[in-house]
Structure formats: structure tokens, C-alpha cells
Image 1: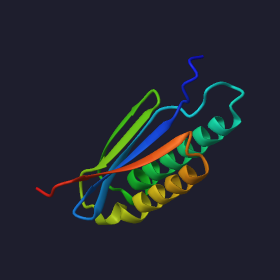
Image 2: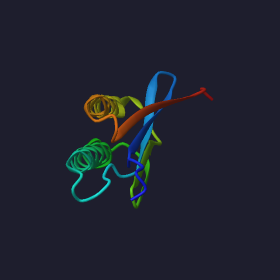
Image 3: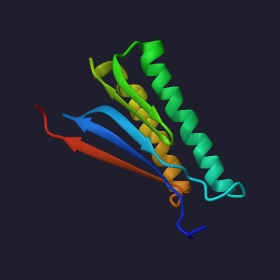
Image 4: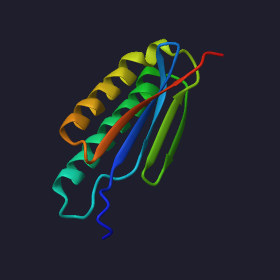
Length: 115
């Protein structure tokens, strides 16, 4: 072990005051004995998959989704309005987790200029 703390990073994309998507990367666990890291990993994974599945399968929002080892990104490709409550709820949930587990989770916002 290198002594470096593992961390999950969540970035939310925003344009013209609306969230357009997110990207979550990384693992929060140092080892199998890292209870806080395992808790954060499980909480983040569950919340992210709930949001992605709700947006695409329940709401029917068109989106580009990429899933890879330790990474999931979702960007809405249609109307942004229908996804706002879910994206804002996910961001709030992860921000609140960050206040309790700042060594395991960081939440960022990335604002882009309108086209």
C-alpha cells in the first residue's frame, strides 16, 4: 500500500443553469478492512445507478452513457428539463455524503458556456 487514500470523484456538468450530466470516477476503498471506504463506494454506486436508470428507463430521457471499470458518465442529449430533479437530487445526495466522508468523496461542478 502506498499510503495514498483512495477517493471517488463526482463531476456534475452544467450549462445555462441546468445540469447536463455527470461523471463519477474512482474507488473509495483502501482495503477490504476500510469500512468507511466500502460504505461510500456502495452508497455512491447505488445512487448513481438509481439516477441513471431512472433517467433513461423511467423518465425516458435520451442520454449518452459510458460505463467502465470504476467509472460511469451520463450526459443528457435531449431536453434538460425532465432530468433536472433527478440530477439535482443526485448532486445533493453526493454533496451530503461528501460532508461526512470528505477523505473518500469529492464533488465538483463544471460549468460550460452556452452554444
